[in-house]
Amino acid sequence: MKGLMMDTQLLISSIAQHAEKFHGDREIVSVTADNPRHRYTFREAIGRAKKLANALERLGVKQGDRVASLAWNDYRHLEIYYGVSGSGYVCHTINPRLFPEQIVFIINHAEDRFICVDVMFVPLLEAVADKIPNVEGFIILTDEAHMPETSLPNVMCYETLLAAESSEFDWPELDERSASALCYTSGTTGNPKGVLYDHRSTILHAYATLSIDVAGVSSRDVAMPVVPFFHVNAWGVPYSALMAGTKLVLPGPKMGDGEALYELIESEDVTKAFGVPTVWLSLLQYTEKTGKRLEKLEQSLVGGAAVPRAMIEVFRDKHGVELRQGWGMTETSPIGTVNTIKAGLEDLSKDEQLDLATKAGRGIFGCELRIVDDNGGELPWDGEAFGALQVRGPWVCSDYFKLEGSGGTHTDDGWFETGDVATIDPQGYVAITDRTKDVIKSGGEWISSIELENTAMGHPAVAEAAVIGVAHPKWTERPLLVVVRSEGEDVSKEEMLAYFDGKVATWWVPSDVVFVDELPHTATGKVKKIELRKQFAEYRLPG
Ligand code: ADP
Image (tube, rainbow, N blue to C red; front, side):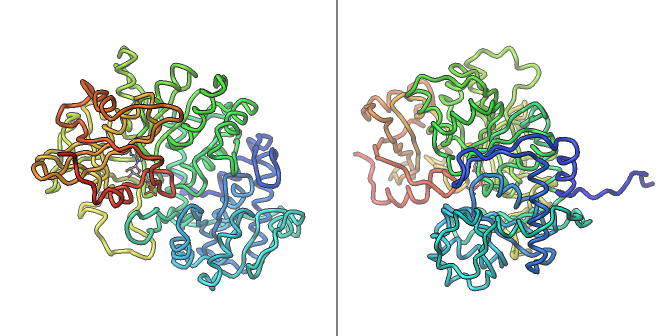
């Protein structure tokens, strides 16, 4: 027997309608290249998103067509999110930090018809314009006064385009399974792969992030996504904030600028922030240098890479900020796990709480998890057994765009292979120990590079650390620690190795330490292990 409930479609346009009606006066504050502090309301944002929708219709864009963005987090980018997806087009967010060849690949692969581009990324497109002949036009995200000289063909000015349109627009009634957004994974090997979100997955994911043990933003919060809009839809914040009526603070091109982030947080009363560990590193460096304290911030959701214990500690003890670690991937929309204390664990000592906080967190409702051995057999949740992490749920991808059926990423029983190796403890907390391809196998046993990196980063003289496996005649592989020293700090190899005493098993202690000026990073700010392994391909362990 079927239930008797309405079959209302879950659509991104319904967030726009809700935001306009219930939170119309809520503010969106942005930093842009043409304005250091732009501010307006949700109502104005949605009005302009409708103007964009009218403009795109006039340009002949049809349902399902891809319209791309190449832009920082600001109000115009937010209008693109709603104007494009709300109209039934697919918003393809391009990561400007990808290599030019990758950008060419994804624009052509996505068959983008139009690209909305920030002024500062215009040169990036000019350099590849002859390789993307099918793009029909470039919409530059500024006003006439700030339009750049450009060799790009078919250029339009965003503000001029909008000025000609009405802010009346009837959002189309779409099927909730219609594609809404497209985001390519960086692809450390091979070509980037497109993850194609739909309206339903986006809404369900946004709902999930609103729960208190996930990100829990409310209408009284002020949220600052420092995670880019081009990185897995800024973890859904552009949707959840408008659902909840949360004031948005968008840092534009100031993402990696500790001082600018501090000023925005303090002056705009930001209570909840979102970002990868490296951006918080720059904020902490600024507060350390100036002796300033974060007075307003309550919580930050941090993920995309392991969060160092020392960072969680400084935020907690010096600033009274809860750093909540999360785990996810482009393929999982992205949130799969979030770390908050569970009932029964409140009495853990401060130190034990920190240990727990270094884990990736518990699975949230809507994302099922399991770990399996090499034969696909399920492993116990004992906090010890390492295995390949697999996930399943309504906001996990079922395939990649235009690669449908080519396989290799999903199991026969419908789980997605994350490519991560993890343990899960009896309480359900997941600890990511490695990417499958980064695991260090020593004497037939696995050593977690992430745990060693985390330990090393607890040393005050260490700014950044990475561990890779290097060849060893007896043990097959041994861990090599590569360290970037903090500015003005010194630490010797012997001191560094001694620092591991009592913190990890003796056979896990790295076999050598190398100091470097910087580590190679991926487009999303993670250490590029492949590059690092290449760099140390000729390296031989001492003795
Ligand atoms: P990309 O593939 O472009 O780097 P993703 O954001 O999809 O971008 O990367 C997802 C990967 O990031 C995960 O598979 C995992 O390896 C890593 N990751 C994400 N969150 C964490 C975390 N909390 N701890 C350790 N690794 C993480």
